[in-house]
Structure formats: C-alpha cells, structure tokens
Image (cartoon, rainbow, N blue to C red; front, top):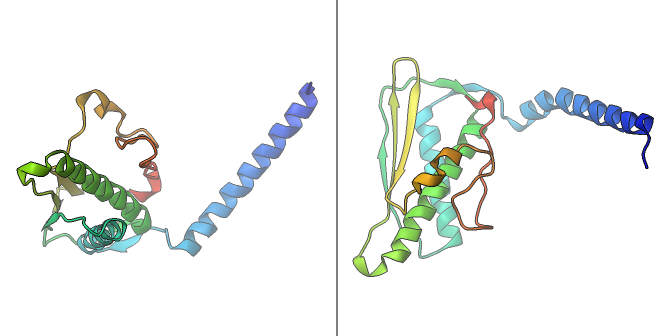
Amino acid sequence: MRTFTSAMSEFDAIFDRIGEARSVQPVACRSLGCERRQVDLNALVDDALNLAYHGARAQDQSFSITLQREFAGSIAPIMLAPQDITRVLLNLLSNGFYAARERQRAEAASGFQPTLKVATRELDDAVEIRVRDNGIGIPSEIKDRLFQPFFTTKADGRGHRPRLPPSAC
C-alpha cells in the first residue's frame, strides 16, 4: 500500500515531467516547422487534396472519385500553422473519400459516381474552407459528437480523428 508521502512524490515527479515537456514543446514545434506563418490558403488546400487523393489511390488502386475545386481567387495570404491545418484537411478529405466509397459499394448497381468538392471563400474577417462529399452521410444521432477528440464515424478500427490544436487557428 502506498503512503500519502510516496504518492505525493510521484505526483511531483509527474508535474516536473509535464513542466519539462511544456518548456520543450515550443522548441520542438519550431524545429518541426509547425509555427504560424503567412500561407496561401488555396495552395495549402489544393496540396492537401492532392496528397489525400494520391494516398487513397495508393491504398486502393481501384479508388476513383470526381474532385471539384472552387477556390476563391481573392484570398490574401493568412497567418496559420500550415502543418496543423493540413493534418485536419487530410482527415476531412480522407473521411469524405471513405463516405463516398462506402456509398458506392452500397449502390454498386446504380452507377453512383463518388464526388468530393472543396471550396474556399473569404468572409468579412475570416476565411472558410468547405469540404462536401456525396457519401453515406452522418446519422443525426451522432452529429453532436463530431468534434469530440478521437470520435469517428468509421467502423471500429478504421480511423480516429485527432483534435485540432487551438494554436492552428
């Protein structure tokens, strides 16, 4: 049985390690290139779309989807953490590909054509990225859970979604 004193010293050691990790995090982030900088949003989104598409094709040579791009032409470079946003986009796009592919499998005889559309637009004081697919959809009973860390609509073992770090926005 642990004593109160030994438990407290374990907590102290844990808090010391957390403090060390927090002091190293900004340095590690800079060395990995995840700091915020001016970015061409349309180019970032297009690169993520191409990367996600080719990644899906590498996993499944028969994968085919119609990609639609509607990028606003007037978006000035914006300050963001490009690697964080790219990670989020890759997850969104991968989920869209998955949903469209699942619907295609369910409706194989109907000639269904999977489609994924990515659009950007500038708002008054923000920018918007929209990702839309014509896949199986999200059941209304789970929509309130979509932004919980590691929640997924995919079958067990088929995926997880990390949370968007607040520093990315």
